[in-house]
Image (cartoon, rainbow, N blue to C red):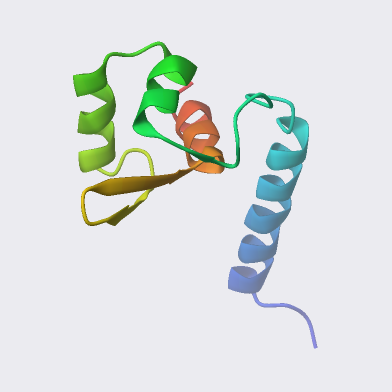
Length: 84
């Protein structure tokens, strides 16, 4: 039995994301896998308020524990990819 169109689309998306992450594995290699808002400021050459606005609006996917942001470096890379 063949794959459904939805299954094929999901597989294609996963494959593209894997390829994307492999292509860009060297981008921001000097940063750890989890970065701080200050790191994001440096990575994107943006000011503090602009970065916190992106985080608050969930433009960059993050986990917030109390007042602390846990930001996967992959989320920053994905933000760049979506917005370029």
